[in-house]
Length: 275
Ligand code: SIN
Image (cartoon, rainbow, N blue to C red):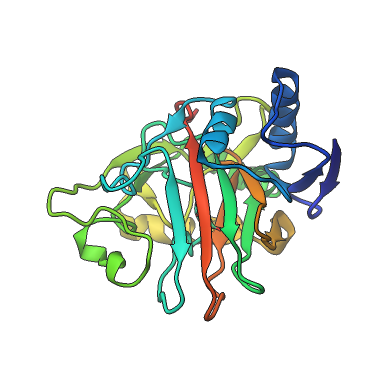
């Protein structure tokens, strides 16, 4: 197995392994690499849906996404399609996945089925690097804060996203937002590193603060968390798998594929409480 860092801060490309054949020993090795690098990239892989699920289960239970689970497909799999002409795409804001849940997923395995010839890259940002670079004063202030996370901006009828993009979410009248509060600084359960844990898609306000009171500090933290020195950028080719650590990173899908299609298969892995 060869490991090549993707940037100074986050991400590593792993070569020399076949993801259809991951032993228990290699699973442990990959867990360690994930905790170290935040996101791993594997090119030239060939996995069907069952093999993709089998890989995910080596790292935990498969997480069923409540908003993409529209009842018309396998609930364990989300196919993220960007069709030519889409005016919105999934994941176009800096985010950590599904943080409105009481126990957000620990990670996701995203596999490129169709990649554009140019465009459609994904950016990642290390949230432990972002935390480490804060001043001691800011770290002290954030230590006792919790943030309320909600999916009200990314699903439900009022956003009307399904008219603008090929990948659909629940927009039925019965949909209700899910909200949970999490510490602003979480401790990664494997590396022990402290990570900033707020994101633009889901973080609404600090617990006990109004949205207006929260906005200046929250906006500053959201921008800080993806300063260029904490990031990497990944260009997809068909057959590439990315495996990101949803506890220590955030990411953003770039909406610049022009007339081209992009089709990804995503399986998320269940996580535990945020502490
Ligand atoms: C996501 O946010 O899970 C999707 C990222 C991507 O499509 O690059």
